[in-house]
Length: 278
Ligand SMILES: *[C@@H]1O[C@H](CO)[C@@H](O)[C@H](O)[C@H]1NC(C)=O
Image 1 (cartoon, rainbow, N blue to C red):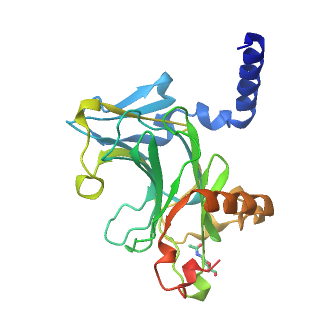
Image 2: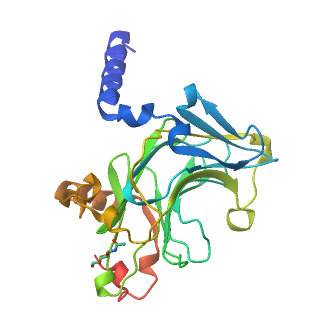
């Protein structure tokens, strides 16, 4: 290998990452916007002057963190590096959720499976009703580096985004009989296991460490359901360019879906359901 070529490639990657990393959000301390949610002592590690968090999962406990505030709209981003080794039976998450469970609204990224074959599940609960699962394969190994996972939520659409590529769009079809999340939600990250659902953990590989960073939040703080202030066009994520995908995003979206979509609940439910119409 020609070392000068390698170094100039590395230099290029380094520069490219400076210009795309959203440095401002990365510099925000965890404690400014988030707090520990659960886990035994030592299972939420605060690293790098509180600019990075490690959630630890072992036989004694999983772990989680939660935003201090609730939000009614926003563009919620987290940089996540998933645990390595055999993570079968383990679920790592980044999601929005209301405080109550019974009538919950919830918008989920959930990582399942093991390092060589991790699947990204997404789901949406509206007023206690879930069952809107989709699943994709990722086009990279999410355990090696941090990647960006983003949820756009405004009054027009919810978009799930991975490294700037939209992987799922859920439109507000309220006017044609669909449902759409309306309640204030916290931002949450967790690692845990769900044996009944995804199988047994390989404890020989414990502890498992999920890494999170990028604790700046672009969201509309509120305690109020359907808060009109959170639909204000003064908030940048409510501007017209965020009402639907532009044609370049639409192409990327269709490309990802054609190559990596594993499961879509819409292919199972009645095709007349408004939420499954494009
Ligand atoms: C969904 O769209 C309708 C208009 O079709 C609007 O009245 C409503 O506020 C929107 N819902 C949310 C939660 O933004």
